[in-house]
Length: 182
Length: 182
DNA sequence: GTGTCCATGTAAACTGTTACATGATTAG
DNA sequence: CTAATCATGTAACAGTTTACATGGACAC
Image 1 (spheres, rainbow over the protein chains, first blue to last red):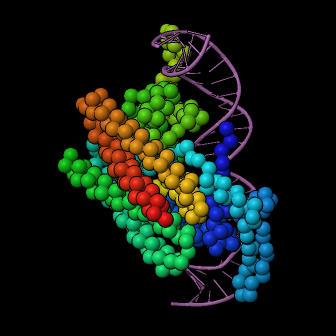
Image 2: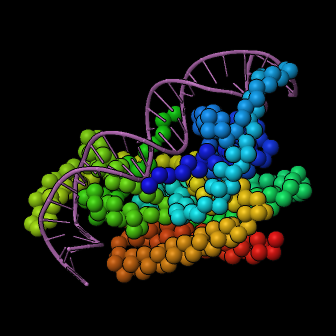
């Protein structure tokens, strides 16, 4: 049973959204896909090379004035086909998040009450920040990509983030209350 | 900047919940911590060895009648201290789930409509199953561990799973409708 | 002169999964 | 007789992060 490398496809997919360098792929990832997929440069650059090796992308090296040299990557027709095939391929696995907060909560003892409350309020704050970040991205997409058809799918992934984050924030508030009453 | 190994602490923590063998740790993980932490045997057995090396746990080998030999692990006072320190230590990182469904949605094109709807209905179904699993665990905890003080924390982690899963299910339904109307 | 943005890359370390290996007992 | 449960473990591989290395431009 071989496993697909989804990060490879994520990077391939980003080549279709106007990102053509490792640097801009990283930026886009951090800004728009951050809540459901992350990558580091240590993955991006080797993967781009690999994509070229597999003929799913091509490179062009450009010298820029007053800026470092840049390598521009472009998806090939073969790459587009591979991307679509991956998009349409069925999925079996439900995502499993690793949640350090819940792990610590699970192993807490009544005497850890104070630190628990502190963890929860930090968590709640981070969730609020995340929620606000989503709203900012939403507005950015609506104003910059209103014409782009694919942008509606981007908004859907964002909606997922907003809904689940809202639920998590509500949980934080309820749980803080519960622990307060212990 | 060194990183903590949370799985090590998760396994250490499970030694305090009545699990004393690699096998029973795996079972408990799959049944109760599955929605926020997963481990494979390939991690459990080496980690247990490591815990003994670091004097956070001890082993006792027991020959069982009509069953294979068993190694029983017990947390040491030093281990308990390490566990509590880890539980109380602050957390900076908000969890990042890798969501293959959202990744595919993000890179979808209008012509992928059919496969998208199929993905979403599968996802929704899996989320329902997960939700029902949570309800079963909840009842199990309430009937088997009603007296155990820590069980209240277990129920809180479960509540998190239920709330976020419910939000995800609602998102699925809304998104299916949206795509239907395209 | 300090920090941030632009820009690319590698090597080592770490985390985690999968496949393999073994074997007895018990329930259907 | 077949599958599941109990029970332990390792080696190879895959995926990912971190630290390191480099360096110009530009704003404060």
